[in-house]
Image (cartoon, rainbow, N blue to C red):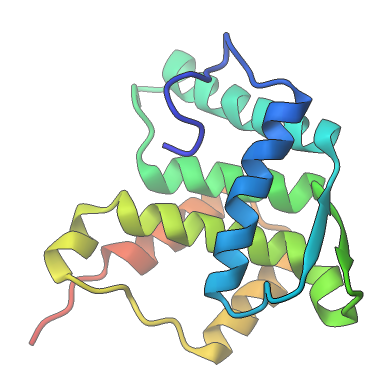
Length: 169
């Protein structure tokens, strides 16, 4: 899972470890989208740590107060993407690109969630391919994520719908 077995609610990463986790993920994910070329991204370590803490707090609530002992990948990624979007740990992008700078946290959150859903979903391995998300849908998702009130639960349902679709021949 995203933070590995060495971190949990009783053993949260410190600010530097949280920032390093973000740095280790953002480059490859943005490069995959073709937008990381010659791009420098700056992350606020304390905000990154807050994202991780809020994520683990949410996961603890599931295990303590819900019949769900182990939240599935969609719940995990819905909550993590929500906190990235809400707290915005990425504070600066250079060179400055107005369109990218204003949406970098949303782009990163959705891309990260989709990456982990892809590899954490039996359905994708069964199908042998990713669901195809059109440019229009991607831009609609970014708009929705940036400007609308989006709960972790709505994101969970959205990810579940995208990655649980069964394709027929």
